Image (cartoon, rainbow, N blue to C red; front, side, top):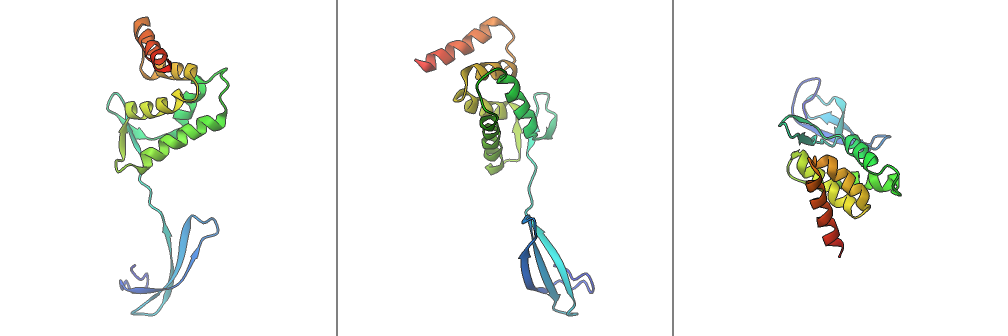
Length: 152
Protein backbone atom coordinates (compact mmCIF):
# COMPACT_ATOMS: atom_id res chain seq x y z
CA UNK A 1 0.00 0.00 0.00
CA UNK A 2 1.48 3.33 -1.07
CA UNK A 3 1.57 6.10 1.54
CA UNK A 4 -0.60 9.04 0.41
CA UNK A 5 1.91 11.50 1.98
CA UNK A 6 5.35 10.32 0.86
CA UNK A 7 4.39 7.50 -1.57
CA UNK A 8 6.57 5.00 0.26
CA UNK A 9 5.32 1.46 -0.40
CA UNK A 10 5.81 -0.08 3.05
CA UNK A 11 3.36 0.40 5.88
CA UNK A 12 2.20 -1.52 8.88
CA UNK A 13 -1.37 -2.22 9.93
CA UNK A 14 -2.16 -0.70 13.31
CA UNK A 15 -5.87 -1.51 13.59
CA UNK A 16 -8.34 -3.62 11.61
CA UNK A 17 -12.13 -3.43 11.93
CA UNK A 18 -15.11 -4.39 9.81
CA UNK A 19 -17.20 -1.46 8.59
CA UNK A 20 -20.67 -0.94 10.04
CA UNK A 21 -22.39 -2.54 7.06
CA UNK A 22 -19.93 -5.44 7.17
CA UNK A 23 -19.15 -5.28 3.46
CA UNK A 24 -15.55 -4.13 3.84
CA UNK A 25 -12.61 -4.00 6.25
CA UNK A 26 -11.23 -0.70 7.56
CA UNK A 27 -7.49 -0.67 8.24
CA UNK A 28 -5.47 2.03 10.00
CA UNK A 29 -1.92 2.01 8.68
CA UNK A 30 1.29 3.75 9.54
CA UNK A 31 3.92 4.53 6.93
CA UNK A 32 7.30 3.01 7.84
CA UNK A 33 9.15 6.00 6.33
CA UNK A 34 7.31 9.20 7.33
CA UNK A 35 5.34 7.57 10.21
CA UNK A 36 2.10 9.30 9.23
CA UNK A 37 -1.14 7.37 9.57
CA UNK A 38 -3.81 6.77 6.98
CA UNK A 39 -6.90 4.62 6.51
CA UNK A 40 -7.57 2.07 3.79
CA UNK A 41 -10.65 0.00 3.01
CA UNK A 42 -10.56 -3.54 1.71
CA UNK A 43 -13.50 -4.95 -0.24
CA UNK A 44 -14.10 -8.24 -2.02
CA UNK A 45 -13.63 -7.87 -5.76
CA UNK A 46 -16.37 -9.53 -7.74
CA UNK A 47 -16.12 -10.24 -11.43
CA UNK A 48 -19.34 -9.76 -13.38
CA UNK A 49 -20.95 -12.74 -15.05
CA UNK A 50 -21.33 -12.14 -18.79
CA UNK A 51 -24.06 -13.76 -20.89
CA UNK A 52 -23.34 -14.53 -24.54
CA UNK A 53 -26.66 -14.18 -26.36
CA UNK A 54 -27.72 -16.21 -29.43
CA UNK A 55 -26.68 -13.33 -31.73
CA UNK A 56 -23.21 -13.37 -30.05
CA UNK A 57 -23.79 -10.05 -28.29
CA UNK A 58 -22.76 -9.89 -24.65
CA UNK A 59 -24.50 -8.45 -21.62
CA UNK A 60 -24.17 -8.65 -17.86
CA UNK A 61 -26.04 -11.43 -16.09
CA UNK A 62 -29.39 -10.13 -14.86
CA UNK A 63 -31.10 -12.32 -12.30
CA UNK A 64 -34.29 -10.25 -12.62
CA UNK A 65 -34.62 -11.30 -16.27
CA UNK A 66 -34.54 -14.96 -15.33
CA UNK A 67 -36.95 -14.38 -12.46
CA UNK A 68 -39.30 -12.54 -14.80
CA UNK A 69 -39.24 -15.46 -17.25
CA UNK A 70 -39.94 -17.88 -14.42
CA UNK A 71 -42.87 -15.77 -13.21
CA UNK A 72 -44.36 -15.79 -16.71
CA UNK A 73 -43.93 -19.57 -16.95
CA UNK A 74 -45.63 -20.04 -13.57
CA UNK A 75 -48.69 -17.86 -14.16
CA UNK A 76 -51.69 -19.54 -12.47
CA UNK A 77 -49.47 -22.36 -11.19
CA UNK A 78 -49.10 -23.29 -7.50
CA UNK A 79 -45.44 -22.28 -7.34
CA UNK A 80 -44.29 -19.98 -4.56
CA UNK A 81 -42.13 -16.93 -5.27
CA UNK A 82 -39.55 -18.23 -2.78
CA UNK A 83 -39.10 -21.38 -4.89
CA UNK A 84 -38.50 -19.31 -8.03
CA UNK A 85 -36.01 -17.11 -6.20
CA UNK A 86 -34.22 -20.22 -4.98
CA UNK A 87 -33.95 -21.47 -8.57
CA UNK A 88 -32.34 -18.20 -9.62
CA UNK A 89 -30.06 -18.26 -6.56
CA UNK A 90 -28.94 -21.81 -7.37
CA UNK A 91 -28.22 -20.94 -11.01
CA UNK A 92 -26.41 -17.73 -10.10
CA UNK A 93 -24.34 -19.52 -7.46
CA UNK A 94 -23.35 -22.23 -9.93
CA UNK A 95 -22.21 -19.60 -12.43
CA UNK A 96 -20.34 -17.59 -9.80
CA UNK A 97 -18.53 -20.68 -8.49
CA UNK A 98 -17.31 -21.55 -11.97
CA UNK A 99 -13.86 -20.50 -13.15
CA UNK A 100 -15.49 -19.06 -16.25
CA UNK A 101 -16.91 -15.54 -16.40
CA UNK A 102 -18.82 -15.89 -19.69
CA UNK A 103 -21.71 -18.27 -20.32
CA UNK A 104 -24.03 -18.79 -23.26
CA UNK A 105 -27.71 -18.02 -22.76
CA UNK A 106 -28.35 -21.64 -23.85
CA UNK A 107 -26.30 -22.97 -20.94
CA UNK A 108 -28.02 -20.68 -18.43
CA UNK A 109 -31.45 -21.61 -19.79
CA UNK A 110 -30.56 -25.29 -19.46
CA UNK A 111 -29.60 -24.77 -15.81
CA UNK A 112 -32.91 -23.01 -15.14
CA UNK A 113 -34.90 -25.76 -16.89
CA UNK A 114 -33.17 -28.50 -14.88
CA UNK A 115 -34.31 -26.79 -11.68
CA UNK A 116 -37.82 -25.96 -12.93
CA UNK A 117 -38.50 -29.52 -14.14
CA UNK A 118 -38.41 -30.73 -10.51
CA UNK A 119 -40.79 -27.97 -9.38
CA UNK A 120 -43.64 -27.88 -11.91
CA UNK A 121 -43.86 -29.68 -15.26
CA UNK A 122 -46.40 -27.29 -16.77
CA UNK A 123 -44.20 -24.32 -15.93
CA UNK A 124 -41.24 -26.27 -17.30
CA UNK A 125 -42.99 -26.80 -20.66
CA UNK A 126 -44.00 -23.13 -20.79
CA UNK A 127 -40.44 -22.00 -20.05
CA UNK A 128 -38.99 -24.53 -22.53
CA UNK A 129 -41.36 -23.40 -25.27
CA UNK A 130 -39.93 -19.88 -25.08
CA UNK A 131 -36.35 -20.88 -24.31
CA UNK A 132 -36.12 -23.53 -27.03
CA UNK A 133 -38.23 -21.44 -29.41
CA UNK A 134 -40.50 -24.25 -30.56
CA UNK A 135 -41.27 -23.58 -34.22
CA UNK A 136 -44.05 -26.08 -34.69
CA UNK A 137 -46.32 -28.55 -32.95
CA UNK A 138 -44.00 -31.50 -33.68
CA UNK A 139 -41.14 -29.97 -31.72
CA UNK A 140 -43.49 -29.23 -28.86
CA UNK A 141 -44.89 -32.77 -28.90
CA UNK A 142 -41.38 -34.27 -28.92
CA UNK A 143 -40.58 -32.37 -25.74
CA UNK A 144 -43.80 -33.61 -24.14
CA UNK A 145 -42.98 -37.20 -25.16
CA UNK A 146 -39.55 -36.86 -23.56
CA UNK A 147 -41.19 -35.64 -20.35
CA UNK A 148 -43.82 -38.37 -20.23
CA UNK A 149 -41.16 -40.98 -20.98
CA UNK A 150 -39.14 -39.73 -17.98
CA UNK A 151 -42.17 -39.90 -15.67
CA UNK A 152 -42.90 -43.60 -16.38
